[in-house]
Length: 639
Image (cartoon, rainbow, N blue to C red; front, side, top):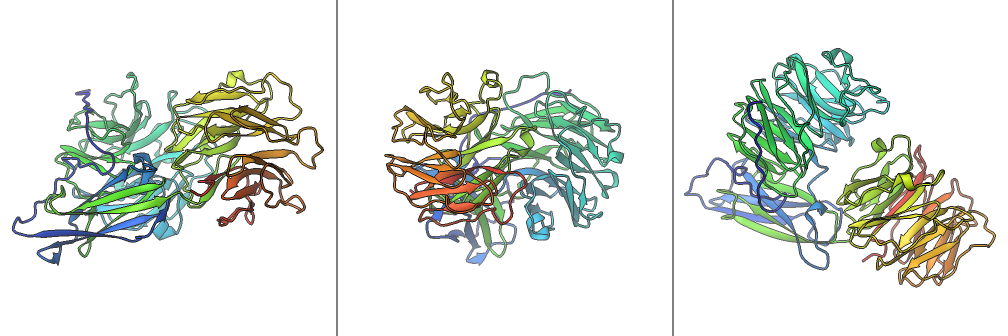
């Protein structure tokens, strides 16, 4: 190892950051007078989660600027009743992969398969535009000509674009494995895949890699990706702790596994000489090995860096965040990013969304410097989104209306079942909990509170639900025996774990203050703790079907219970109807507050809406293979 260099420092705001090195561009003639104006495609109030586009029009001496002129967009949330945090602002599905195009351009690919072309890189299409689909994209590999590339999805499918040969190829089913990366193979007419367990596909491209599902390549973590040697006759593989292995003509120059890093390793990039490489952590820290030189690290606290692309000379590199911002170091030239948008016909378009209510301001900064001498701003108001998510027992998440798919737990369950989905208080994320109390965080949901103590569970005891605190900095995890695990800033107000129950606890709900909670058991028994008010129950009364959920009414003075047959029991709450007299294809598995009433979901994904709010769709006509176990609402009472 020649050097192990890293620089982390103080800096400024996420995503729209003005990285000093990032904004390097060819200076415009100082005699020209530049003007930048902005318009937005949706001038009226938007629901959180809806897309918004801001168009900057840039002129020089009254005429549109040349195509390819970069306009920098700065995006931030404003204080108010709701303050939109940086984690609530999205510019797409998340940049996770990139590929260089010669010396003067690159492609960026996001998690949904959308590909952006910058500089000399040609626009060759992407999964939504070319194939009419969205797939969890984990790699992009260019052909030798630069006139094509392949995209790989996590389920083992490879899609060609441009002059990339071979057609769509499916390497699935993955059998408890998944695709983690894609690179070109020798000659640029083929590719090599790597799986989460470290298997190389196709098998002929393994180059001595003997990893299997039963015997993974790394014992200290799953594979994150792979990087090809300049010849294409070898490749490096790495994981989140910085463990690196080389195959073929890829020599080992060192790694980070011996260090106790505070951040995960997200990327590896080979030096153009093939005699070294860089590793990058999610905070933008860069580590150089072999002959790879160190030119700087990312400086945006709170940003999540995912991709590093070296320059053709090896004397610089581009660092990209998951939101698509770029920081350029050494001789790297900014050819564009999701925040540095090239003009076409004098216009540059910036797309984004807020997952939370509040207001946002977008500022467009045009030439000559993209730092404020020619700029314009526009502010947008976002109201709470309307819609809902469904959760399958297999961890799949199904969004409807304004709900956004922020990820699912399918690959994490390992034979266990997902049991509940709980949104964050600002609806910019959610947690999924499984039947042994493992919690998976998505969007702006924090994983910090942690999991339930599985060792405390009695034989046969299962986790059934999770409820968040008002701050979102904690949650309660509930079990079939009425046990409560208070995590983060959640307070333990008592539980039923020491009391024999006639039927298991199936659902829970906190009070609006966060100073109490309800539990409901299958026989309709209600257990109120803290400031939760008991208004009655069905305990001890004959039922046609077990009770599944408890839902508080909008004023908090009462609640509804729903049974598996769709029957409703109202306690100090208005009755709005039920499905009790209707034959259902599948039992009702849950119910949530929705506007002025409630909404039920069946195991087949059928939705039964008894409120005045809109119906946003269901899965009832096309039931999923795994039963629906939970439904969660965006802004239940319609603020």
